[in-house]
Length: 82
Length: 139
Image (cartoon, rainbow over all chains, first blue to last red; front, side, top):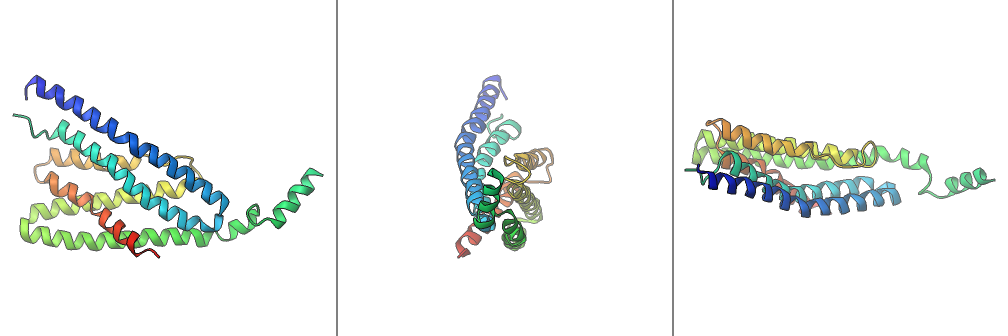
């Protein structure tokens, strides 16, 4: 792998993780805030709120995982490496 | 005087009554555990089905990679569920330890030639169809 490909892969991996974590991070923060507020207001609905939070977190965090996987593939199993 | 006011409020307002919220916490955690159990059961069923199909059509290696990826996905989901279960009680944030699972999966897949990367990643994402099915079947 030549140096330009290596440099581009490292930059792309950093961008994939960094940009891919912004949106899910904001979404998870606001979802957790709403869930904790909801549990504080309605403790009897804690099970349902936690279940919905779990499902929404799993879907949101999968976006982070996509970026993470792309970055790791670029770093450790680069398809552009000659 | 102020303590009497607080005692009166806590005895009449169900939202401020700590005893009533504690008495129903077992039911709440049971509901949450039941949801986790349903998702795990669906994910295991999907894993068995997918591993069988992958092993039949693409060989043992693809099936084994898919199986390891699916186990990693279930372990990731377990860690995520544990982090959310602690939220608000013993922790103020949801931990990010579960993100180490896909990292380790990709690293192990790239180091060992016995594991294929694409089937392992597809297996890791098998918890999502289980979640979608569970989400659609929720009342």
